[in-house]
Image (tube, rainbow, N blue to C red):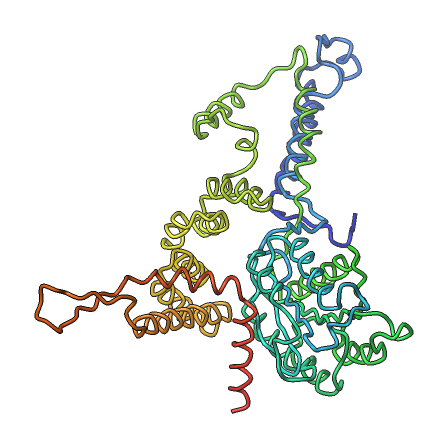
Length: 502
């Protein structure tokens, strides 16, 4: 127990303890003066009083005062430990930057350095289930592959596509990675972390300058490869990189220790930044532990000869009459609200059940979206006017193949939150998707007819052209995109490099 952090969440309830002390003192004074007006000497009075059963020991008023004081302390909410639930808004956002230099194909870490790093990223996403993880690829230039997302399937799709031939430029653009990560994480809650997975390092001067500019960004460096003594990575260069970035330096071991190292550093930095910014801290309310001694005291109050004043009975009757009706239900309904039950099911991956519990329309939509119930998600997100709701409304419209409606939703999100990177990236993807489908449709229309049929009933020498209907290009294009995300990334990176050169 950290006594330095001990405090009360609702200190005004401690006024009840002061009332209990006053009540107990008044009762003591009344008992002390009970025989003063009788004319009997106090030394003889105690021999003349008749002690009935239940009159010995503590009086009802004493027990009432103790229960009132203890209940006031419980209601005040004593707390000394943080409550850090593993839920979406309470975990640190993370961006993983993967080095795609040619040396990452080295097989000193089987099957290769890059494949080992990709497996670590998958394990990290599984460990941080429900939290947001982004992906950056870099070599001589840096590129955003995926903004922070909690969609593990989508993240795994692009992790599989990473290879050392995606970026033509040679080098290691770590300064660009830092700038890109700082820009992406600026749209998230403060306290984001950048994890560099690399086997080499650039000149430290530019890295130091960019790292100092991104003051809210924590940088972690994980070396991928064998040590220099084994003919592997340059440890001195990586130590220089970590020192220039002000970052802890770790080594990829392929064990759960790697995941612990990343998650603990990320969460610690997130908590520290939230405290510095005056963010709302979550504390565990320990007051409920006092319900056990309160129940024991209430049990001791059931003694023969003790009577409850009629005023207390009247107060209890009024309270019962004004209380909401109680319905027989499950144990969870008795102790958890529907939103709390939905949150518990969401954390455990039971998204369909979570959608049935949630009353909050945003989280109902999130759970339905994760469960693949896009109709319910569309209804839930359409009821809200927040940037996050419009963003997921656009994602839902994409899943339903309503791309124009998705663009409109992303535009609304960006109007409320200009420059929001996830909405910008998703809108760009949908725009390129629509353009690709339009181009494919035009190419299909320009192809020669598949069959020519002579109309003998018409004039001689005239032919009628009959075109066989083409298959819907949308599904074909989507399947091609899903099967070749590497080609998609290669084209995207090449276009970005060409634009930066111009």
